[in-house]
Image (cartoon, rainbow over all chains, first blue to last red; front, side):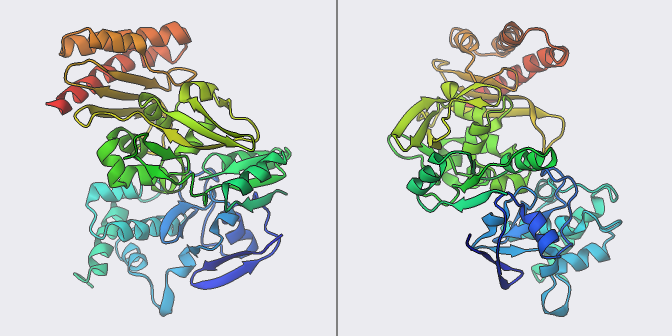
Length: 159
Length: 283
């Protein structure tokens, strides 16, 4: 069997013996010890397992590990590069968008993916963009607000 | 443990399938759940998983061709956002936008939606309204199969074990016709349809297309509803009559199931609203 090779958080990885049925989620958490990505449901309904595949949000529980081959995977661990938090992470902290934190990695990555597609989303667009990420704690209001704020920071309109 | 083959050519994929005990992987939004259940229940996994997402034939989007073609590997995200789809088949774009979540739409494919064969499939309802004819490839060659003959029972297709769904040929619809998709689910997103509706109308009501999904075991156009519409005078009375006829058809085929208490009045209203919307869109 060939090695599975892809770019993980900016660095190339080469893995042997990856089973065909293994999900990207199981690979990240189980084999690679990157436990920032969570398993909330395992069937693609909660979004806690969201990672970026070539910059766009997917459910890693529904993605076969082998589908990452030759592509770029970004987990929550890969967001804060260069020693500082990503503006989205900072906005979540600043605006009360984190309570228990379990949905947070997936929520942040979905939001980052959304802003990558649409740098200035309105409230409705944010809600659609985050519809695949469930939060049991916050009631979403502060999450949506944090995403709006992060969008402004990333556009250079605020700091 | 399964072996993954990431097929680079259609021949490579067909060769892998022909060996038997293989499953096709596209978006994975159905297959990965099935494999997870298999693992949890100690069921045997396929020997081979064939990833077909890199095949050019399955990713072909050629809606301007004399025979409009939609590749099986086209994702719901592409259907939702691609300008050509929005222009030629707003029905498909609309249906795609109601599927799952952003994450699911990024991965999930129209081909997988059909091959999974759920009676509630949103992509399938739209395909049915467009008289989609599936193109299937096997080591023996290719064949075509209308969508109503591809999905023959809930979760059951006539795909042979060595066949790959390559894509769909669609009817070309006149640009001036309206196309409406409606969906009712338990949530606003990440919801399996409890009912979905694909409706196409023209100004003269000469060629209406009506598909009611998640209400029948297999995809079908509602011929009697279409006949009623094409014989009638456009307006609230006709839309309501069409809704009644559709609900009647639902009960005729499925019997009075426990869901009928909800679905019968809901179908009536949903059909009337969708027809009103489709008619207004023509103005």
